[in-house]
Amino acid sequence: MVHLTADGRIYYPPSYGCQELSYFNAPDSFGLASDFIYGGLNIVNQHFASTPYYPNYRLGPVAGSVCDTLSVGVEEWQASQVSIFPNPTQNSVNVSLGRTCEEIQCNFYNMQGQMLFQRKRNFGNAFTLDIPNLSKGLYLLEILCTKEGW
Image (cartoon, rainbow, N blue to C red):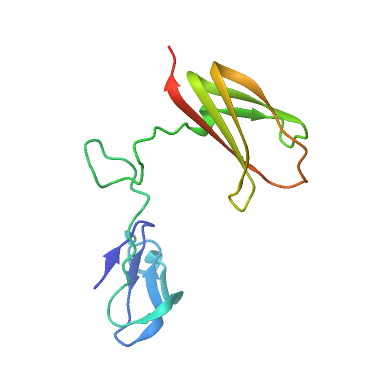
């Protein structure tokens, strides 16, 4: 069976068991322009006469659908709506949000997912977050806006 996939390719399985799939890079093109790659994709498990099934997780939201996204009802900010600077920093960061919130919670994590500290703030859309002495490294900042102000 031949499938058009989310990456725009058509994958073609062999008629014998193996760990490679052949594919067309440009399935809408004619002849050699279709760029057929024989056995070009190695996969973990051996398969026979069919392509492995990989769900397309990049479909995005569809209005009214109950099974198209992985959201849990939380509206997420776009990167363009939040500004956090300076980066890198030592003692504090300035945070500017794209909306005004009544209650703001900031959770600071290390790269292992352990929460290092938490700060709560009241009404606002811009503030400075003081950071305790931490070793050099990468950290994650989660900002929760529990109630939107007007």
